[in-house]
Structures are given as C-alpha cells and as structure tokens.
Length: 419
Image 1: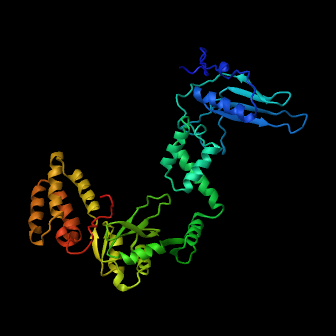
Image 2: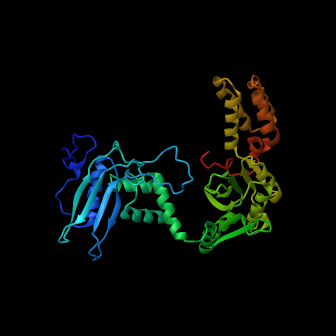
C-alpha cells in the first residue's frame, strides 16, 4: 500500500501543498515535529529561524518562523578570513513557514509563507549535521550506554534499530560522546581529570616534570590488582608503543603480562613525551619498583626492534632474556621483499626460505638454512643484504627458534596477541 501522506506536486521546487494543512496542533512542539517529519520524507531539513513569546505583553505576538536549513547567507565570524574553497550550504532558500497559536489559545496552526526551494532536494539526509542531531531520548540512551562502556558502533546500531529514520553518523556520535564527557570534566584540564581518576580509582602512579618546569613529561600508572598479577606471573612481559596513534600525539608504552594459561593482563601504562632512551629508562625503573623481590624480575621480555626501548631494557632489566617480536620481523621483511624483489612470482619462494631460517631449531644446521636463503635471493643482493645485516647477524639469538626455544617464554614470541 502506497503512503498517501506525502504528495509530490508537479511544479518543480514548490511544496506548498505538502505543508498546507487545516490541522490544529495541541502544542508548538507538535507543530514543529509534524513539519520536520514531512520535510524529512521530502529530503530537506527544517530549522527554527526565529521565535518569540508574548508573555502577556500586548505589543508582542507569539509565533515560530520555520525555514529550510539552506536559507539565508553564510556569515563569517572573522572578516579577515578568506572564503572557503568548499563553500557553504547556505543559498538563500526562500522556503518559510509560520506557526502561531489560535486566538483562543487552544492549539497552534500552520501557514505557508513560501513553499518554494531554489535548490534540489536530497535523496538522503545522511551526513547532514542538523538531521543527524540526537533527540533528547536518544541523548539519554547514549549517556546510559556510554556509562556501561558500550562501543560507539553498537550504540549507533541501537539508535538505528529504535528509529529507522535515524540518520546520525558515527562521527556525530563520537562528537556527542565527547561533549558528554567534557561536561563531566567541567573546567579542569584533561591532565587534572586523569590525575583525579587515578586517585579516585586507587591506581598506583608516578609522574615526572620537565626540568625547572611544572610541565608533566611522563606519567606511569598501574592498578593494585595488576601488581598482584605481575608478581604472581613474572615469567614473560610484552612491551609495545602506540607510536603516537592517540589523539594527543604522545607515545603510550603498554606493558602486558602473561599467565601460565596463556591469558594476558595489562601490567602498566606509561605516557611518554618522546621515545628516547632516557624516557624509557624512567618508565622501566618505575615498573621495576613494583616487583616485591629481585628474584621476581621478568625472565623474558618481548618487544619490537625499537632501539631506544631495547637499550633501556638492557640497562634496567639486565638479567632478563630479550626476544624480538616475530610478527613485526616478518611484517618488515615481507614489506622489504615486495619493494626489492621485482619478481612477484618469486615472493612466496623467498618468504618461505626466510620462514625456514626463523623456524630452524638446531644451531648446527642454522648456517645451512641461511645459505639456502641467500642462494634463493641471489638475484636480489640488496634484499639479501638487508635481511642479513638488519636481522640475522645482530639479532638471530632473539627470534630464531634454535636459541629462543632454550628459554621458557610460554609460547610468547610476539607482542601482537593476534599474530
């Protein structure tokens, strides 16, 4: 059955008929909701241009003036700014409606001032900021699900399941979440908020300031439960940095422990001002203070080939066996192979030969596997030299099974838990 509530007129751009109604609305909000519903189905967004209430003053009238979001002109907040290359949605659209209460005050009526548009209507209102705004009930749902640690994607899915006409985008959802969290923080800074939460939730934390300054350069934090796990399961630690992928462009060193059943737990986190050896040493020294006894220091530490972190581990945890992440090694070698080996058909053969080198379990036969690898790569000396000088000669004891299998690492040879 076709929907007869929306009539599309033959006159292009004139939608007077669609908004002409004799209905008396019980309240101003009901009138606005009806207008926006009709506009939504037609493909444009209604905004409130102006409204006023008489409040008993005889020289004033109560009314609401509605229009298309593309009405009016763009007004620059700064006259010195150059016009945007992208442009503006404003195109002086003449579409206007006026709502006012009837004389006896028992309801509102709607009048069309101009039903014409000077632009094409959209087939969808997705990505239109005003159309994607959250309603009050949707905002309440967002706050409740955010408090319950629900992921943004799942929140958006719930909103769309509850309202099939919802056109909110994931970006708008993130903005709404940020606004809510910003309101909780009030006037304090983000760093003050972090310190407050660490104190509130009883985290163990240290911070360090830049010399002769109150500017914080590093923050280390962990939970008391994590300290208990760290001392109970101290055989293997995994360490990896985010390499400035967070919004503050700061490296975050994540330290992860491994239980005897192969499960992982977050042991500690360190925000660093830079990835220099001095910064890593400070963070690792704070980690070292968490161990109850000297015998409790980690037996094995797994990292990627971050030279500053590697050097820091050799200073702070001198007796720990240091492994290099096989996932990152394989990823780097594969990328270099595709760059230097100009025969696509040979990629698989070359990488298989390299995996045989990594998986060699006998030191006495390791040289033979290396020789076979170089023979396979004979036509690409630059690639062969890269692998030999970057990985085999300096670090073979840290990733080749012939050496790593001699230490207890609980099968943890990568910092990538899904690698």
